[in-house]
Length: 536
Image (tube, rainbow, N blue to C red; front, side, top):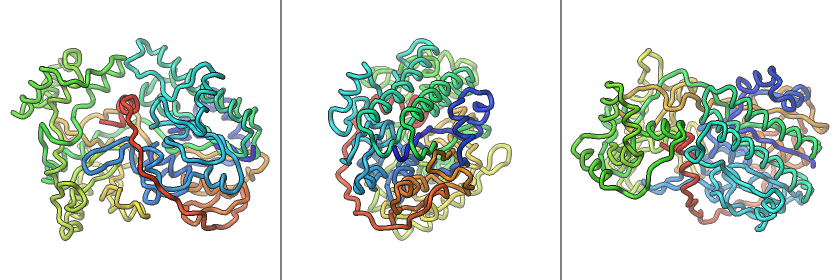
């Protein structure tokens, strides 16, 4: 194998270094000692569904088109998938030059495009996802006995230990599956990603014992992969970092409602509120409710239209100290039925999804029921930026590090899919949410959340390990991979090869031909994203 990329989702040096010092990850620790290493700056937003496509294409979201876990069509949405990523993956470019690849568990790679090699998709794919070529999943299951994309949902496990064992089984599946495919296909390039190093901080925030067990499992597989593959060049990379939230939860749409930009309703088309109920329940190992409306749900919907919303019930229950009792008695779907929502069609500007990390204007001619005329677009956008720039926490600190017009952050043919305004939380220590709650500020729903800096470590016989990595960016990974094969970067790429290899220049590769996106129809994917706090 010429080049190997190992992806560790959501790992930054503030998390990794203490694990290395305690010898929890000896294989990764030894690799770091023999590599060029530096924090790897992520993009905006620094979330899995957008950042991994930026890593494997080398372009910003304005060029590949994915900004979030969700893809919006008007006010409706679907889960983002590979069809929404409108640029060649690096393994597809390698295929054009006669090199083969094995790609396993990389997020947003379903449904796979044709290339010379093997691909087993990762995060955002449905559990029974198609692989490339067809039949690979069957071969893996025959070899391993079982292969899964996801662990069972938290509600399906009764104890913490069972859930942790599920993480460890899934991690071992990744390692064994990758080594099996490499042994069979002998590729020039390999790319394997481990997701559980991110998921553990969402599911078990602050639980050192669980974190240790998950990282020990990952380290074993990393060591076995390095030994089995013996590549000339190894890149260990992460799409972003992760860390504790020390600030506040800021309910963006609450604030936009207060300032006159958001209209709320108890029966609109926005996202439902009070999601923290589901998060508390899932962390206790309980399952969600039915999707079929009940008599009680319909009754609660009627109360909500009369102004007795779940937010008001929740606030009162918290003041009385009986919120845990409410959790026991109120099924998730009943809470949702009674929640106030952003009325997208009647609002001027709103946050559609918290992981999109921005505000969208309800623009006439673009949105189905747009209320902002094109002639008022810039004036309205400036007004929203002004009110957001000035908001401060209860402690007097700015909520936002920056509030930018989208064209200051992104560029490319898919700029129109971006939020009109990009909202960057101060130090990534303020937790932004889109749903409506009882007040503007609160405690973060997620105790741990993404940070901007991930990691890059580059080693192997084909690497200048004494090179200084100055401000490396996720956009630099794909051009670096191409350079390790003596190939130039694509002229569409936003990054450049890291100084561990000789740059070869830039060239024009064949243009990318997008196809009509298939819809990811999987309640399992949506439930898992909700369990991790990504979907509100």
